[in-house]
Amino acid sequence: MSAPVETVRRLTIVDIAKLHADGGRIAMLTAYDAPTARLLDEAGIPLILVGDSVGRAMLGYDGELRVTMADMLHHTGAVTRGARQALIVADMPMLFMFHLVKTAGIDGRVAGLELNLYSFPADKLVGVNLRD
Image 1: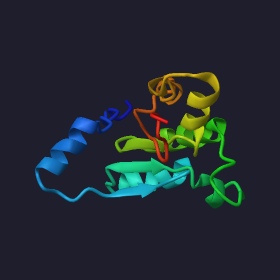
Image 2: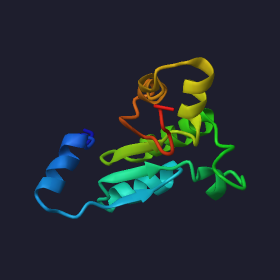
Image 3: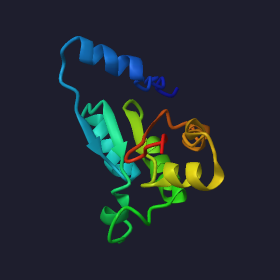
């Protein structure tokens, strides 16, 4: 007879908001792979960021500008598979939104759709002014 499988629910933004409202401290650490995400998750870290800093830290780039959406999808997928409970937050690649809006005329809200299609619940946009 096998042991029952424990069901673990992934935290949501509502859970994080409740932690904040209750005055608790909220830790957020960065991971780029499944083993690191698993360790952070087991340590009780509620938020794990997959940053575009993956370019410097893991891919050998001299900055974040060369990080592609494919890079972010690959590393965010690994982190998502490694962590069972933490809310995963993924950076959009640097200037990705700017490129979409300026070259394709795509509404900025659509850019997060690609990460959401892969079941990544949160994305973080940096350095984008959609009004220019």
